[in-house]
Image 1 (cartoon, rainbow, N blue to C red):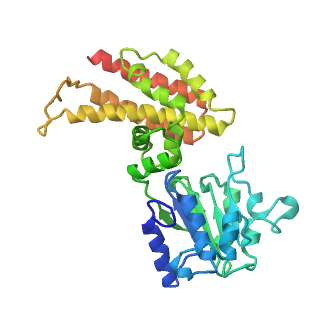
Image 2 (image 1 turned 90 degrees about the vertical axis):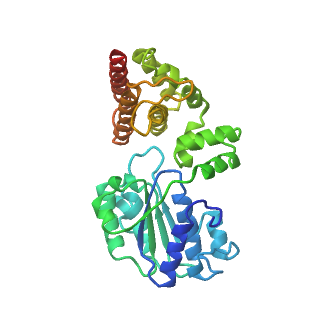
Length: 351
């Protein structure tokens, strides 16, 4: 665990080796699920690169020098941070090259070209790289292609498919793995997100290695919805109209911000998909090595459960992808429920 950051020691060692060999790159793209520590690692890496009290190739910020104190205070003059403004869907070009009245006189590209004020280099961290527009990305190209001496730029995104080709071709991609389940559970307890170890473990397993998703799923309303999924999404009791009304209200209680509602709807898709993933796992566990049905103690093998569970799971994953592509939320929810109704009705007919 490097300076309190779980799960990414291998990546830190990679940066140390690059520094020791004098091969530190100028532009990096951190990719991985949200909530696994990419931003936290980028900040601590910047602190290590800017630290005045320890050898740079050790990446071991002392925490005592002026540079480290300024980092902790959040106002280091040689560090630029850019992220998605509140209420915005895209990173505006003004953040990089200034508004129309101050083009190339302010902004990240201007700042990083300046001489460092304290140490050997300047560092810039661009959060939410998934939300770069073509114009914003183009404004970065010259800086990425001809970076100032010693400058380091770190862009942070979630997946390669959401990055523009111009960014991918000019950065070194660093892939982050999700966190182990036990680490997520420990963090949930430490941050008092989970009430007890049992809930922490359950949330960590559903979150699939990301703290952000675990935090979202810990919402009391979502937690109550999760406990009703088995009943509400059973083929015999599935009612798409009633569920549509209930889920629309559940999404609305997330708040007025579109992104908050988007996260809530994504969590609903994820929770339903997770339930049917468990159904699929259970049906598969009833199969013997020869492929013949092999009921577990106290259970009856249902030959249709596997196919319907897989179909529902696929539809939930597709719905999450459509949500990421900015599909209309009300229409997406209605279509998703209609498709689930068809899948579950077919499973009843087969029986």
